[in-house]
Amino acid sequence: MKISVIVAAYNVEAYIEKCLESIISQTYKNLEIIVVNDGSSDNTLKLIKKSSSSDNRITLINKPNGGLSSARNAGLDIATGNFIGFVDGDDYIANDMYEVLINNLIKTSADISICNLQRVFKGGEVYFEKYPSGDLVILNNIEGMRSLLEANTIHHYAVDKLYRRALFDGVRYPEGKIFEDVFTTYKVFAKSNRTVYSDAAKYYYVQRADSILRNSFRKKKLEYLEAIEEMTIFINQYYKDLLEYTKFYYAYGSCGLLIELLRYNYKFPENEFYTIGKLLTRNVRKSSFIMLKTKDVSKIYKILSICSLLGYGFCKTFISNKIIMGYFYKEKELF
Image (cartoon, rainbow, N blue to C red; front, side, top):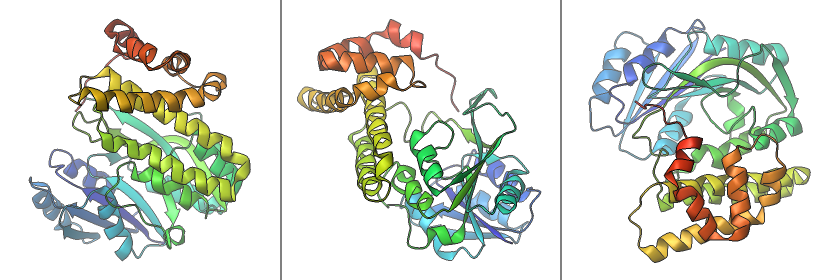
């Protein structure tokens, strides 16, 4: 059984060789490696060609820049494997990741197989999403969707999973959007009869300072809320009993965006800054009770939920305090 591994690569010359080597050296050998160069302007394409010359399993797609969704979709359109996996061009994987994922999938007759993910910081420091315990968890359709929405163990990431190819029939990533995984993963889970999760940490997520999602606020990041709104409509239609979880997601996302907006110095016009801040505060306030009663929510989010009851000004005072933020955020050095 063949796995199609789709690698999206854009200006990742410092990372792509390690990424591809980690895939080429997989203990599971029946791979179709589709590498999509998404209009890179550095040496990424040259390095992909170098790797592909030594492994005939690599298929190169060289296309104009269209973003991560466009690159993944290009790979999906030509994939011939029984299963689909994704690796981002600046990350890398353990050499037995796909062997573990496919074995778990076949053993449990699952449609999606998931492993744990590790964040890797400069200097080699690793942060585990969840410390491994050796557990193997099998979930039916509703349990899988609930776990995805709870976002404690299973997350919307595309990359830590192996999917039966048929799950992507009629499903593609939204082009021109960020948070493409949040727009998409729940649609794939809705088609999965069974999901298996292993907390063995096999995917290495490199933390880059110049990442599009890191340490900066742009209005485009409000697309996260758009993704949740779309997901809420879907869940209300097909999984009505799980609707409460989407409310939490919306509040949690609004908290994160409000912290980014207020924590860093942005050059928005004052009225625009104020309008976005008020919007996000209102979103948090509407679901503050959910945030406060949810056990695993971080303290800073709970405090911000209380501040939201008192208004945007209280939120701004709290988040703008560098001493408070220094206590909650111990910054790690990024690549």
